[in-house]
Every structure is written in C-alpha cells, then in structure tokens.
Image 1 (cartoon, one colour):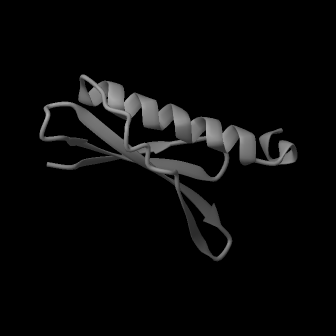
Image 2: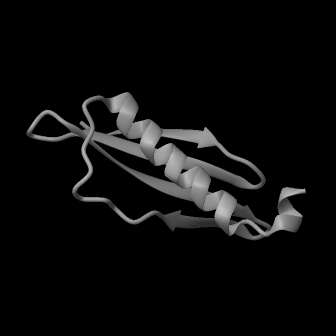
Length: 82
C-alpha cells in the first residue's frame, strides 16, 4: 500500500512524500514540492529514480525529503531565503 505524508518546508513550500513497498520487499519513494502562491498552489514533481530502492520505509522517505529540501534550497531566490 502507498503511504503519503506531507512535511513543512522553508518559505512558502511544503513537501509530500509517497512511499511504497515493492514486490521484492524493498521500498521506493517519490516527492512532490508544493509552493503556495498568491493565486493558488504550484506543484513540482521531482523526477522518479526507478533504480533506487531502500531497505526500510523510513530510509525511502528520508531520501526523498532530503532531495526535495535540496531542490528548494537550489531553486529559491536568495532574497526569499533572507
């Protein structure tokens, strides 16, 4: 079964991570970044890494959460981070 959790992130962002246990017993995950705008919400899906699997759900979730936080850090204008 797929598990989805939403996490707070800096500035006007939040992060959704979905994890799933695969047939081989290992875990995979994907992340979506949510950016609140004055008129709605922008969704940014991170590329799926098909060949990356994890021994636990916690590892899979942590990996995607860190990828999303890194994306936010690299793509947020420095003035917004001040």
